[in-house]
Length: 363
Ligand SMILES: Nc1nc2c(ncn2[C@@H]2O[C@H](COP(=O)(O)OP(=O)(O)O)[C@@H](O)[C@H]2O)c(=O)[nH]1
Ligand SMILES: [Mg+2]
Image (cartoon, rainbow, N blue to C red; front, top):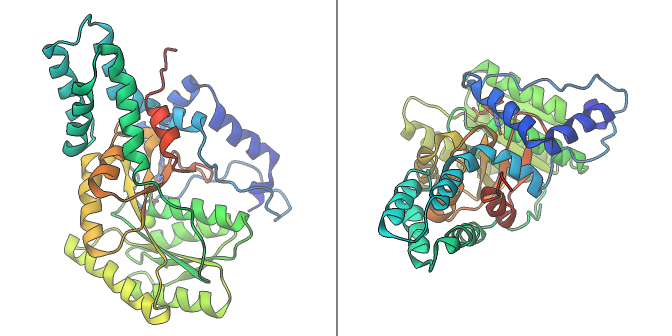
């Protein structure tokens, strides 16, 4: 936790977040160029040297801010929005051929069919070429605002959060980032390592727990995930934890097996606390585009998903999938992950997101 108090890291993080878009673009490229790491990959080590004080100075997790979104969404913007601009610039009038081109652009933008159709209707309703861009931006904002998440009350103690999602979706990393945020707010946080699929997955959560100043309940590798979840909740009740976050495995022999496991975990948690889990977070990897929407459909059929953590927006051109998720599933996106470091998790803000999506890089 020492790194939280380190001015050096604070400066590093600030520079990373507010750095010039060009530099960020390179960073993003570097990140994307990496081979897709498996869930067992160790989170990148904190860069600051160990300081002495365990006192947490400030929450390490940034809330939403336009500048952060703007850089995180650079790749997405360089995709369909930039192409839209090129297309619109080259035209004198709103004729059928422009509409055709915009249509194929929207349908290729990972928005999902329904969302692409709605966006296309917005384009058709536009009276002039100039109106298209602002109309699309406000339609995007409307879609995102229609499912915005309410504030978390932490109205139960312990407040039980269950993290679900397929392998590599960013569950463990997002839990680490959230744990750091919550311990920094003074909460007593317990993590439950119910991804018992591989020993490395348990170790990965352990590293994050240590970094975040949270405690962890571990099971045996290959052990029963539901019993780890049960133990974690029991420990949280017995020892007065404010929050307990359960990490889960994202793979089973079959998808049906995975969903069975998730529902079993919920059932077993309820034996301890009938109204838990108070929140089910679904982690989705933005890189998977349309697939993320399908994954969400499967998980929502199995468990009552409260909201979504959309990870890896920094490394993808498929950020438009946020619109598809909002429109097709009606589940709020609560957090967006834009990097592997502890501070790279942002509260989702619909208006800021839509604005960043349509920001002009050439302005
Ligand atoms: N660039 C980037 N990488 C991320 C982000 N979130 C997670 N990752 C990386 O994606 C990989 C899989 O994440 P992990 O949390 O282990 O996924 P899990 O299998 O769902 O637990 C790891 O290498 C993470 O460091 C993010 O927002 N941006
Ligand atoms: Mg994991």
